Image (cartoon, rainbow, N blue to C red):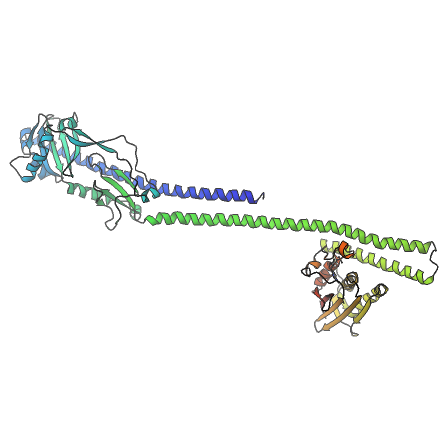
Length: 544
Ligand code: ADP
């Protein structure tokens, strides 16, 4: 829990910051697009003020060469010759006298007079556009851009006023007015030479559009593949586009900036050429980092589980070790008690019958052998644990070793009513090994067959040899090993029949040692249930 809960919390935090990271990515993109939009808006404004300066210079040039009244009377004709951006040139005195264009001249001039005379003479007010307080940047996130209903507030508002008020004390300006829903842009200039005369021009919007188009076509190389810059007019249609092949719903740019009061509701708009690309980039970051976090969390969880399993194994081992200590103490005590009891009886001369004396001495002998076996097992196990167990390899006759071990053990077995059934070949079965260690394996198997037999006290020992291998089987008709414990019985300290239920003492080391010794001889000890009941343990060794 101490590992899993903090790592879960860490994974949650990492996922949250992953989400934030995505938002940051989107916002950064939005900022970049807005910077592009703002920069082009500034360039558009710069382009218009450049035209304004151009216009002022033209007027000054005319005034320098001719008289004011000449210039004023012929201003329309003269201006159009010099400046293709002006579609109509006008001159109006501040006391309300329109001198150009001529009422009797071309149709366009006449129409201009009809539409603008009253306004220019300040006899009527018109709706003009003025900037409102700055600061409402039209910054949209990717999601906002998808939300077509959102529209940011305009920087421009309109108010009613007349021409004289617009001019005021200024020396130049631009004003926009809508006539029959058509935008007219008027540029005006007052020369210091002639403060009472205003020279102006109605701009040719086609020329203006062409100028703006040249501007937006100038998108930086690296951005050209990524975005499209367009100038959108008051009707929402593009008047200048940086990428002619690009098509979109022009009304919903990713970022935009209004050009200003001189072109009301015109904006420089920026569109991603491939809107899905940003989403793809964001989701690829999401998946990569997500997979990384998931694998780290999985690694922590697997690590914790391994630690948990290890801990459980250690706990089990600690429990088995403490069981082992009590089992061994008991196993030591039982033979010692009988040895002491029978030796005291014999020493005190309380047993007169020779037969009984022999029997007691035999018991003392077998209990001593049992003690020796137990202590040998424990010492060997300790040596193996430390890696200090040494084997004296020599050529041994397995048949002879088995016969000797059985003969040593036979009196004890027969005294307890066991019937031994031997099938050992008379010819030697030669193996390379440590003869004492192999005898210990056979004794352990025999002693188990005795311990775990109940009513049917029959033990069969058979030795079979084939070229290259020898197999010694120790078979009994006892309790058998409970299902599922067939391999566990070879683990250290493991006891499938505990002392309480089976009444048999043991250390849980006999089979562990038997298998380790056999494996050190490139062989093995295996268990299988014996058909007809009981157990069959086999010592397999390579023979020479
Ligand atoms: P122990 O000192 O308990 O006999 P062993 O390592 O020799 O330790 O055996 C491990 C366990 O295997 C025993 O506790 C017992 O449950 C089981 N076992 C071993 N030999 C036999 C057998 N011949 N018949 C049934 N069970 C056996």
